Length: 366
Image (cartoon, rainbow, N blue to C red; front, side, top):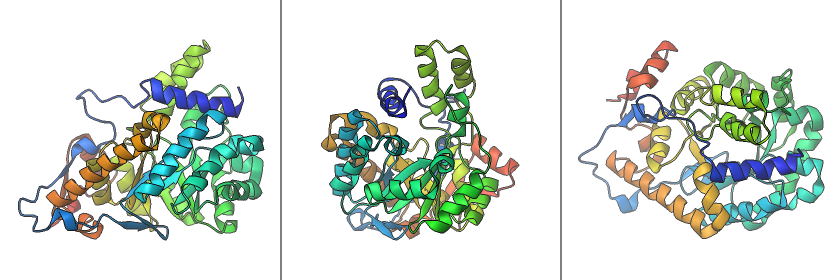
């Protein structure tokens, strides 16, 4: 199957099938956010109308700390989806990413499905996207071509080796990936973000990436879309037993998002972006208190984007209202205040972090 056709197939599966990580045996989200309790402030002493939700990420101002995560592009049927996402991002004052631009590097006729994002979001923080595997094939010049295609403010290099290991056509040669990322960081004139795609980033990998020169780390933890799960449906359609078996077995493989935020934030000096099961404004607030600089979400916007920009904006407006309410109820007038809000970490997330050597008591700030 061509890269272009695979992109629209992925989009349709995400819209029409249950592709999220399974909830655990206690019906808790795999993200770990259910184990995070924000300490309620009964006397917040602030006016909710005066709360400042704005922030900066890589030199760009955001109206609130949420991005539209990299989603799609690379097929004519994806153009309208990217157009809707871009219009919403522009109107809401937030950032937006594009899906992997590999299809457009293979076939320039697909460039318009990506270029529409910059056309419709001229003032937004827009970031490009290529897989680390494409760095071997196309090199720095290919990355520059992807940047120019959308006049990108930053470039995301995605790590998706879990998905690659399950895809029958997957690229499973992971050798030299860190060196390739380091070369791109040195030669590209815009910031480089490295992002996982649903299996999380550990402290050790975060440290290696920071040393390589990345400008930000997108943790892409467990709890949101499972790309192993997506591959299950593809394998079923093609009667590929091995792919279906591996996808089911590894459906929930990886590091929970809440854990990955802490592992990355404590270990590096660059901004951390929280993705992987960000489903409400409370998830955004929890992520900020854990150390994230911003969050990103994708799956909740897929179906709305197929209907139009207004539907996407309605979802984003809910995120903003929820986020502002969480700030108010913790007495946080600004994001700087929110980073100091008290939280309590319990359950499996607390146990996981303690086993990894992290002191969770520091979040119960006094």
